[in-house]
Length: 148
Image (tube, rainbow, N blue to C red; front, side, top):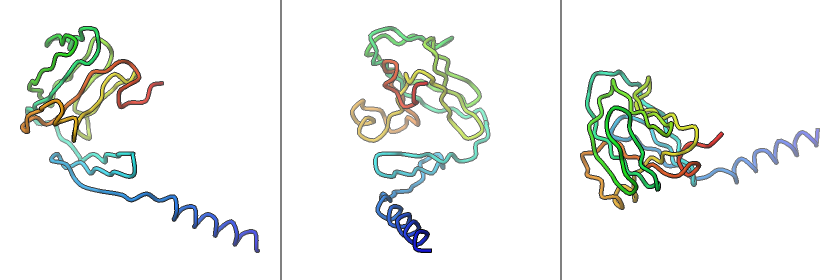
């Protein structure tokens, strides 16, 4: 009986002292953002494709040109703002994909070559307020998605 009490007490104490302060809010697209310590989680809002247009900011921070299939090529240190329809996809010649799925904007990036931007980086790159999404193309492994 004492062992169970000790284990239960240790579990409760580790939970209480291991908890980090949590900040929750919704972005302009209805997604719930949870910031807990150094980690950020997004609970996407339900999304229905409607043909709506969004402005996207892209910047290439690699030393190679990157092509967005059937659209344009970004040279090193070049940036571009363009309209993106929610029924379309952005396919990069280096592998990543950006598209609207069941829960809104989704990214496939197996090699970690895209970093979503916001906050201080939004200001650093001087992204206009009317832009809805921003991404930076970075060297493999430096993006948001974990590499496999």
